[in-house]
Image 1 (tube, rainbow, N blue to C red):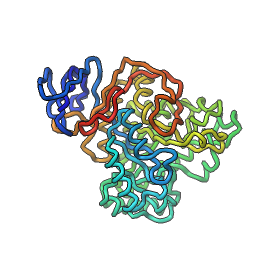
Image 2: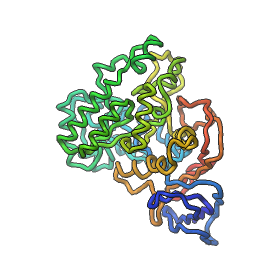
Image 3: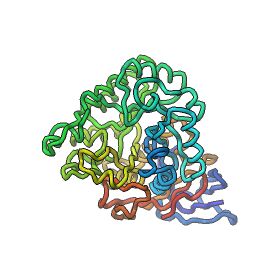
Image 4: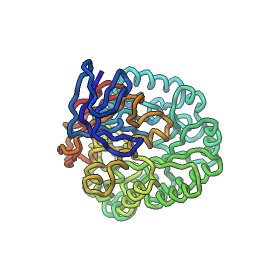
Length: 423
């Protein structure tokens, strides 16, 4: 048994922080109370430290199978654990694509063997993520997927997307939409407008995202299916989602730490670690995303952890792949930029990273409660450090936050009652 003493514990049921002890027996939280005594338990003094539910990430890329030179399930799970995550959902843009029960079983088996974090799988919507034919969604649901997405790709054919929604309405899983109109975004590298003009690079207009967000919201209204908008990045996207919620359409949405914190100005030195899709936008878009987070238009924060090898990111901006890593910087970056500056309450941030993503995939995780899984993140909010490549456990180092000073060091992560990270 493990006894965590004197911690500042976030209780999801009360949405408040209290000084309490937590007794863990096996995989389960056995007791939460003041002054717990148990002579057979190993004691850890957490005085001055906060104990949060283990973070839940609805959107990440583990690159396994097929691209394990970028990341694999082992290194990805270790990186997630160091970032305080105890549950993560991996996307299907692997090789082969996770569009069938065989590839799904490979990921589930390997994830189970690693044991560093709970790994849930998002299956593909279309075969090979090619947007031509519906994937074998039914068998993958029976195999354990928690959602479907062609993330990295977007189904351009509205009829096929409608059929995907109709088919998936037989199952209570979200459709996670990477919203991008290729006829508008093709060849684009950065946000269309000031930055694309300054750098002399092709731009990706906000309209490329907004047209597809609008389409998928309308299709969801018709079919009643749950549409989840991945990595929202524009002001109008936030407005479309806000109106859809007012209209009682079953829509949820996520924003990433990099879209909430950074703007297109981060790209001005051609740093490929600031190249992602959708791109960093104008400050008006960033502010709209943050306001959407505060008023719950944006339901959750997801990392979109997208690792790439050093040699890929060392290419010219035009030839470098889209994507940045995010597990290990997510909470410290958000805490430093929004909580320490008093722009947002700590309780809201915790909800956006724990219980609310858990609700979207309908899993009984992301809460601290007696009888629940012992998934916990222990953080020293007063400890600061510089985020460098040496800090990163991920196989990839492509972070836009390298060299930044962060507060909130993840001291320990516990998943199913086992320590998966200790600082």
